[in-house]
Length: 482
Image 1 (cartoon, one colour):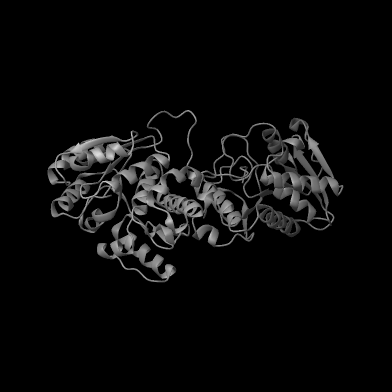
Image 2 (tube, one colour):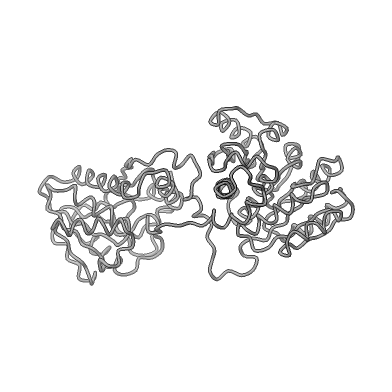
């Protein structure tokens, strides 16, 4: 099973791997045509009702594979408003080759004739909510036809994730969906075929640019809506919490507070006027600081715990006490990691160890990344938390889902890049599911490192990464219906 949002990410990831969306559309349309051939004999009258997105594009392709049938393609709306380039190209191919096409300017008068089969190619998995015009009237016309109805990917008007419809929806006899089943299709009284359209397994296995689709910023949001994060770190080191805090902001969070020992507070303040810094008396984190930290963490969306804290006995005791009492979301990094396996906590944790730290926590590792992924998944299941294990291939697992990220380069072995990663993860965990946050953080942090390496080579330093995060996390390209 795959959700509509995840399917959109996989589709984009496949393109990033070198499988063009136009090629996937060709495979999808071919799959629809195969289903038509299985349902009606050659020469049958087939009416294709197509929308102006990529679902319609799949239907346009299908028409080209149905030469032995009497096919009419009904486009809902003006051709100039077809929303994606590849769908537009496939529409033009039909027009140039003089297929039987009709532009429907008023769907209330849509006349399908007397087809044996109707193909619903109006809206795909990326569209939810009540059908509007022209699709609503067209859906009624499809339902009124005395014909078998075949839906492309999902019946128009049906939520692919829930199977529910808020208003009128196409009542399909058959559905041909792509790559994997969609959760909502199980609830329908329809026969569902899952078609393999050639999306590589790597598009799901490896984190890619498509995964950034979980990071959505409401244009009407207010300060704090996009993440208010507390970084707890410093003492022996001042740079680590500052790097994490900088990354929190550059990864899109609205606010970052830093709680650090007073001995390094001025250094952290001096790093950026954008930080809200709270000094803790002394030169290292102690158990008597915990109540204050819990009070500050209560109003935060996520906590980043560990950068630069050191491994003093009192500090580790404070980490234990904090995690034992905390029930929010925390990203745990550096020396704080070793405490996690021994603590009973209600907190939701994302742990970001390198392989040495993973072993110190009690986990196992391997040279082969796939073998390592299996070990990480097993350990994440034992912990009941999400792990992001750093390496040439970062491995992310929550014990059930496991993925890898291949961005990054050998120049990122310099100190501090892990502190940046912890901050990115904290910013994303403030608004996202922990597993999704860890996946996107691994990819974005590595991508920022790659951008830095393009300019600096292996002379890059950790401070090169945060300011490149916005570019690394910027989604480009054509955005349209799936």
